[in-house]
Amino acid sequence: MKNLNIVATFFVTLIASTTYAASGAAAVVARAAGKGYSETTRQEFMNGCLEGVDAPVCECVLKKLEGKYDENAFKSLEQALSLGIEDKNYVDFIVNSTTECSALVDGIAPADQLPADQPPPSSVKTTSFGGIQVTDEEIMFLKVMLQSPFMKKTFVQTCAASATEWLGATQSSKTCSCAYDKLSKDPKVVDKILSAGSTDLSDFGTWGFGFIEPCLPKQFPKEMDNAFLKECMKSGDVKKPTCECVLKTIKKDYSVKSLLKEVFEDSKKLEMDLLTKATKCLAK
Image (cartoon, rainbow, N blue to C red; front, side, top):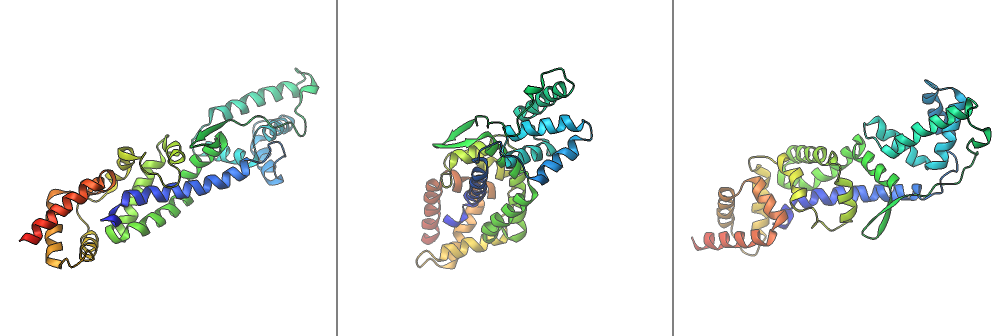
């Protein structure tokens, strides 16, 4: 039954995908802040800013941003805002910077308080996950990434490919997509993923199964029946009639959801139950 752990497959795929993205984000965010953005990013900011603010104020705010946020972090935060994910520190920084720059441009504050072309980088706040320091910008990057259609598509394809043998192509894709939608909306999921690392699934427990359970089919797919019989007959000299007997008792005692829950949360208990069922079937 080891290949039946669809729940574990789901989380392994998710963790691997986000950990890979995090490593890419880390390489970018680790660069010193304040080096200035690319001309494309600067122009995009100015175009949006100039819709409601004068150019000198926009230029002033932009310089403040370049001194505070790495270009990749800035773009991630802006994308997050467009998706309705608001980072309070970032929003407060924009509001305060706009107020300060407006005062400077209007001559209310001394001109020497204008931000320098290359202001020194600010300190970067980090959080430790299993001994690894992750910046707030990296965490935001992951949250934005989880809302990305590209990330969902990539994940569903990988997840479904692993579950197709047991759920069938259509149902596996539907289940993976459904579970991803539910999990990606959870505010604690990034912390859970970072805390779990790349292989440890023990911390997910019932919390993790709660996302995939509502997305599982109510009836046993024919693919699951076939896959079980195939696995069963690989076990020594067990004949097909015996395996069919075991499958019949499994479907009598378990639903798809309860069976997979046992696989994920207490596989040893399930193995003992299956062994008992197999013994009874052999005795017939």
